[in-house]
Image 1 (cartoon, helix red, strand yellow):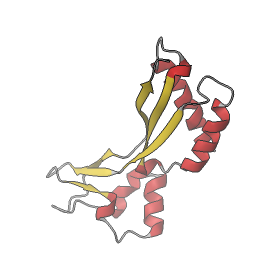
Image 2: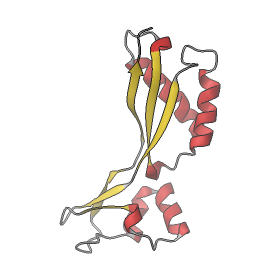
Image 3: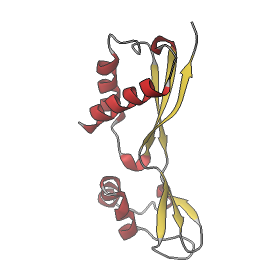
Length: 135
């Protein structure tokens, strides 16, 4: 049920970031889910719907986008995505979703073979944009 907590946090972050604007004027919010965050968007949307019901955000459109995971080698600077490793098993992919640092067990740089890399993108939940329309 961490999706409900995330939904509450997103609404609170929007409230804090609209400053002087009227919450009724918030037309849309784009929420970016990192691929490795493994958030169930249906549960998130369900929680969000309940949280904003009978509030000024009731008619706000919350749009979810997924940021693909990418990795960058600390040795040769090559970047790659999770899709670059199609032979990962379902269990290995699940391990990476639950503990992103587990990627170091299952992957290495496709260029130089180094296991020394960082997760460059695809973690966390971010508010990408808030659209406010004065009515």
